[in-house]
Image (spheres, rainbow, N blue to C red):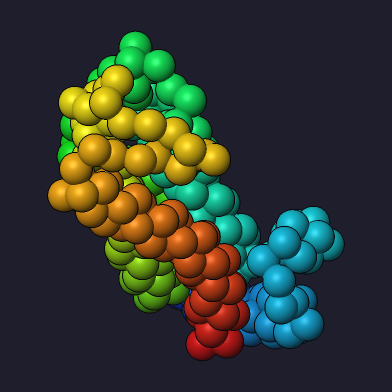
Length: 263
């Protein structure tokens, strides 16, 4: 009787263990299947949400309408990254100039002290611009570290995270290239501007102003001044073109984010 009870108890124990294993395996399968279903739904939801978006400014509304979608949260991180880096870059560029040197100054009515102050500011701006690139690169590195930390906190898979960070690296590379162009255009502007100011300081008192036009005593000085002024005007037009390129860059970023969601 004791042997029978012992065998029966073993049988029941093994039976319940098997049932437990089956339940656990079924639960894992169901959880994995549910996870895949949730991911697929999240992808389709994000694709549908972005389908009609053709302006980066529309993103905030789309993201508010889908607050729980993790893929759209990644897009939100990419958008925030772009906006914050652009704002920081503009602050950095402004810090290079002691004053707004892009605003035209009527040099024909400037006193000698005004010209000397302007010349000093241009030298400072030139010097600051030379170190701005390294400061920008440090800013980009900090931004990348932050966006990666924020992306990891969303609990996405490793493959999705890798694709997302590759997209962010592309985004940063393009923004760095544009920043380099802006710095170069400023150098193109500061150089001839400084030359114009230096010529006026050197010949101050010997040139005349007739109907708003500078008349120099030497033709060579007039030619040098006119050449520098022409280079300044060309650089100023380049400023405007780069602002248009910035707008184009924002649009291309939106297209890249939509491509990321469609993968």
